[in-house]
Length: 85
Image 1 (cartoon, rainbow, N blue to C red):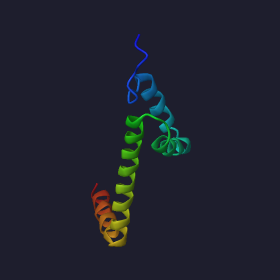
Image 2 (image 1 turned 120 degrees about the vertical axis):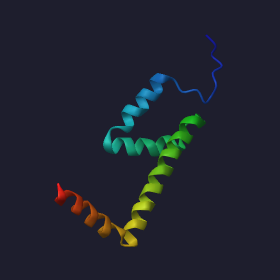
Image 3 (image 1 turned 90 degrees about the vertical axis):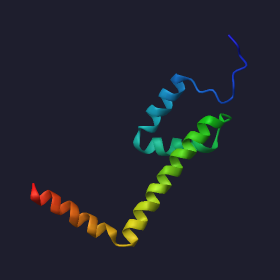
């Protein structure tokens, strides 16, 4: 075996462990923050930074929808769909 592995190499077992940990509700969020900023593995850090970037995009989208009053219109549409069933 070659011990000179690439610093960005993440094994399947490591990915499985990280996926398991992130599935735990509160611990997962904390570990995603920890993995964003710690360690030498740039691939892992970039992956979790990208996840947080998507989370912030969706939060911003929700805030924009609520601030511009689009949420009552959406709720009204959903209610009209459910009442027609």
